[in-house]
Length: 273
Image (cartoon, rainbow, N blue to C red; front, side, top):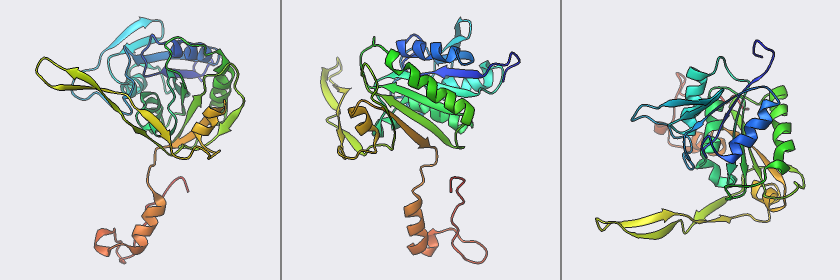
């Protein structure tokens, strides 16, 4: 708690500090605690967990507790935690993104990247996204769910190394909430011809169509969105494939494995077991 007894909540996104979604999200968080917005000065969609390492990052004060950063969403969280906030926040929320970040799209997402950065700093974090590409849309159908999950995380916390990725369908009323896993999927036909520049170089625009590889699986985020439900997916920082790790340790070539003093194979300890 802050000195005035309020929780401290950091709000960020990848659409920029002027986006409709972050304004809506900040308004909800202001009812729950002291809110500080630190967000990119313009859109940084697709930034994932990218950082700015080749030039200085600037921060501009927009208004009371609202700051625009020249860097990525991850930069925003890093600089907020170290240079802007008066203390460690109780929660970091990112979004509400214009466009869903379900399935493999979360790997590209700056919205999720900001939540993962908070997670790395051991601060509870939630990424919120809406399945729409409209710059102006009605976020009111999701207000209750946004507040409910933020309140739950503030009270109950999250496991160390885990954040939440929450996606909403574009509906007038949610039909429910699904606690689910990522769907297996892939993007294809991702590049569209965009002409030739003055130097004769071919130009391409990133686009693409998503293919859900398991459309009938009812325990995935895409199934939930397709059925009008909010999709809540826990996301872990640890991306080790422990099943394959055990197989490699059990049957791999000894010269490629770690050995202790007794020449026994070592399995790294996992805090999530």
